[in-house]
Length: 167
Image (cartoon, rainbow, N blue to C red; front, side, top):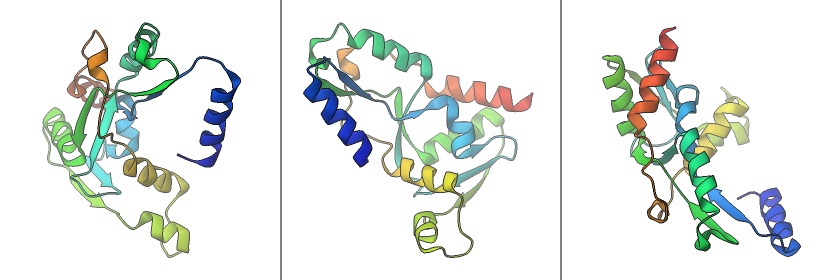
């Protein structure tokens, strides 16, 4: 967690306001722009393919947020929710199944090192952002069992991303 976010959380805690921090991983709807290029059938990994991601759909995070208001354990606490947890390789397999194509995989685990040390080719700030997010995109435990619904399967989101890319 960065210093700004930590300072904000501390101010909220000191304010006496009731709060809930919801950690949810990556939004599944953004996978197509994040590391999986459907049009070019290319995946760009900034971490090992076995890196696990917590992924959630936007409608599901809305449901978790609304339902958290009814859950006593979420008061003045942090909850962690995920629609699913898959490795980068497993997500790639789902994209390949949805497109009926074998994809090219580009691995760039040195993006942070190159960015910080200005080594050519210097990656873009977006590449650096994605690499940092991938480092922190999973949770050891999740609190889905406290909620009354099951999240959407990741394949639903992948199908939509593939359909949108075909337009």
